Amino acid sequence: MPHAPARSLLLVPLLGLLWGFNWPAVRISLTEIAPWTLRAGGMAFAGLALVAIALASGKSLSVPRRQWLRLVVAGFLSIAAFNVLLAFAQLAAPTSRAAILTFTMPIWATILARFMLAEPLDHRRLLGLGLGAAGLLCLGLPLIASGNLSVGLLYALIASVSWALGTIVTKRWPVDAPAVTIAAWQLLIGGAAAGIGMLAFEGLPVPKMLEPRTFAALGFHILGAQALAYFLWFTVIARLPAGIASLGTLMVPAVGVLGSVALLAERPTPSDWLGLALVITASGSIMLPVRKAKGTA
Image (cartoon, rainbow, N blue to C red):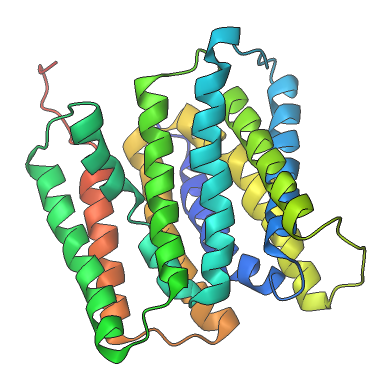
């Protein structure tokens, strides 16, 4: 990357750290904040932050009227359902295992794209699917044998499939608007959906003093992992190739697991670590583009 600014390259690992440490931050926040309330506030704030970023950068917030339905469907699947399911997953299962399972998102997207978009399965994608299946077996078989398979892991798996479905909807029916505008509206849609769930299942939140640890985790979740991370993400994808930007997302499950060990005192098993390595390798083989030879289209 001889032409990539050094500062832009530094944003890639920073983004991976922000999103990775968001996993233990959310789990700590859930000790005092109800899941629907946490997700409603986090997504709504992040959406408003992106609205401010779009306005400051001169981006239009308008979306063609005929494309609002596809925007809402994609936002519900990729943002609302994804985030709410993960909150409940972390309440019912170790955060480290939920992080590993959730990062099978590119694998499910590849499978769905084959059947719904007729995208071919090349050698790299087939390798990624094989590695991903091996990673799931490493995670699941020991838990099944010991009887420790929890519903939280099912929530995490459904969340990853939901994200993949949202990605397929976006590919099949794209929205004619800037990326930051699409993300802003989808986060606001997710916040509104979570807000309805909050009113239905938890009621209006009652203000209360939080423990310092919870307050710090909540601040990091909203300001760092939501507002700042999304701002950095759109900065990275605007300045760097997709393959380099994808390296930041490949860091997320590893940082999430290590953060859970350091901040939540979780102790992943050897099969968990092997599953993590296989899932990251599988996602990398699917996400990272192939360097094409000179002179090829």
